[in-house]
Image 1 (cartoon, one colour):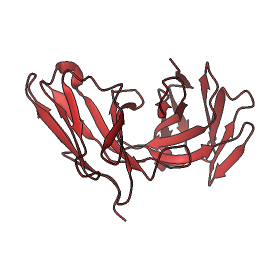
Image 2 (image 1 turned 120 degrees about the horizontal axis):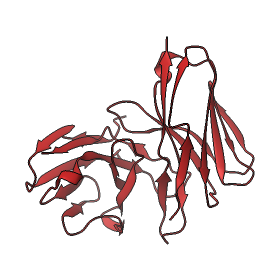
Image 3 (image 1 turned 135 degrees about the horizontal axis):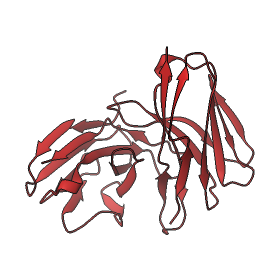
Image 4 (image 1 turned 30 degrees about the horizontal axis):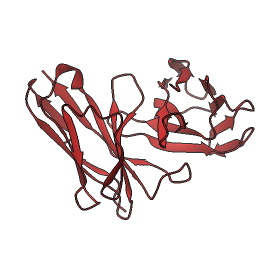
Length: 113
Length: 115
C-alpha cells in the first residue's frame, strides 16, 4: 500500500537555526499536508499543498509540493523552543477505493536553547 | 469555539477487560474519524463516519473493536476484550466534510495502557 517516509526521524538543533525535513512516497499524491503534534495533543494542520511545484508559507514555516508529486519539503526558519514536537506529512490515499489520509512516520524535532 | 473533546484522556486496564472511548466533535462537523496512533508512528485511520453512517471501517478489527455514532454527533469506540497490543493513543478527529479542502481537527486523544 501507499507509504510516506519522512527524514530525518529526529533532529536536535540550536535555537535560531533553520530546519529542513522531507517526506517521500513511492506513489503520486495530489495533496500534501503537514501537521505538528505536541506531546499529549492531537496533530494540528500547519500547511496544505494542492498543486505540484506549489510553495506555501505560514509564518516561519515554508512547505513545497515536489514537482514529481512524490515528495514534499518543510522548512522552519529561525527555530524557537516552541517548535519542539513531531512533524507529520500526510496525503489522501487513493488505493483503497475510499478516501482516507496516510500519515508519515514523523520527524521529531528538539530545539536546544 | 470548542475543539474536539475526548474522554478519558488516560486509561489503564488489564488485558481481557473492556474499554470505551468517547468523542464529541466540533459542532456542525458531519464527518468524524477515529485514528490509532502507536508509539513513534503516525495516526492510522480506524473508521470514518458521515453523520451516523460508518462509510469506511475497513481498518477496524471487527472481532474486538466496535464504534457507534447514534445521533450523528458524539461517538464511542469500544474494545472488548482488550489485548496488550492495543496499548496506544486513540485519536478522534472531525471535519465539515471529506476532501483535502476540509481540514481535519484532532482531539487530544485517549492514551490506553493495557497491562
